[in-house]
Length: 520
Image (cartoon, rainbow, N blue to C red; front, side, top):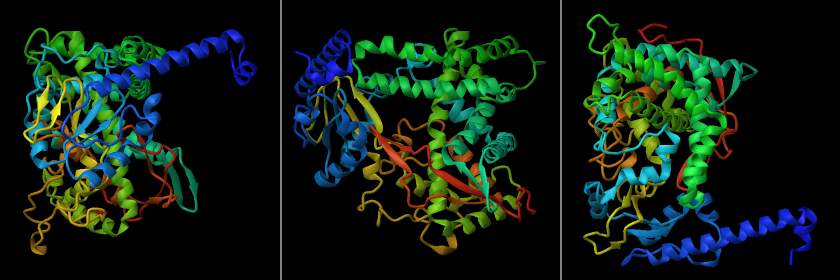
């Protein structure tokens, strides 16, 4: 019998359908939870039980509060533990020996690509891109980002700075002016900067200068996030239906591909022609890094470029936002960073940003306290796996490193909750600005921000360089502060730590604007 409330709110046929749907959803969740329990890891402590009443019909606790749960459990257990997630147990490697084993494991045992495929739904959200035998070791993207892009960063700096200035100006022009300050959305500011820079670097000026492309690329990024997060909440059988439907709704993915395809076609036609114009962007470097016919097919190249563009567009604005927030919360470091930038840029050297050691340490410390996700080094267990500590993990589960917790471990980082911009500089004051050896881009088992030492983020030098340029431009040309210093600035969505969209910054143009060549 239908409840009086439902009967009042809905016609009988709609209410009946609603009940059937809720009943089917409930049965599906029960089956999923039973499968999770049956496939649970062994010989380690657990945070909660997948079959407890509060987890029986929903995942709301994990969705809204996973980072806090993981951090609390890390402090309680002090060792590797497991936590029930959306569709599997997540084993979180906390002991250094376990972390090293995860980092050094083979792809066919603990798979990075399988974990990312489950999360991102590449085939449906990235124009059909799949990690397969066409490029089994990610050599194309690796060489493009880690070698060719990195080699050309100094050359690209003038065009990157122009895009940074353009992005800031765009946000300021739409801001609200009052008493000499302009209120802008922090999220929009970071997105305006990074989207323009990414389009210039990855696709070249031709596409970067097209407003219609920028609009399509922005909507595409939103569609991917919506599709992948919605698919995580539903049975996997629905992903091939739901994800393509979301991507077709706005058509942004196909629009992005339609813009990129003719550019790639023309580059392929010119490839090998000594009289062809020189191009220094990731379209060109992706073509140069593709060595087989399958890798150099038009479709595959477009897919690869779209996948690289999304990876940069999704993560870099968040990292920039958190760095700007850190400057606002700790303004005592602004003048020192500004002076370091002025002294280094006076030299007008090609790799001048590499000499900004205080900025390197500042960014590394900001990232330590503001990781973009509670987890890093996520791997799907492909075959039953046993850690040397005795922990047994059946296939189908996820194993990861709880980076947020490790980065706040007092045994590794003294006073872990305290921000110290000089934490990663040599202790000898005379060496603070000379000969610093720890870089923002360095990878370590105790600093898993960039992934594992064996398979670290190939684009980290580009991200680091762009963040440095953006911050130097901001601190040398603007004063800025948070409009509401005590307001919440982030929220949790599953394990992601996401900047709030409503946070606003107040910007004011400085009177002693620095033009980067040693003069005001």
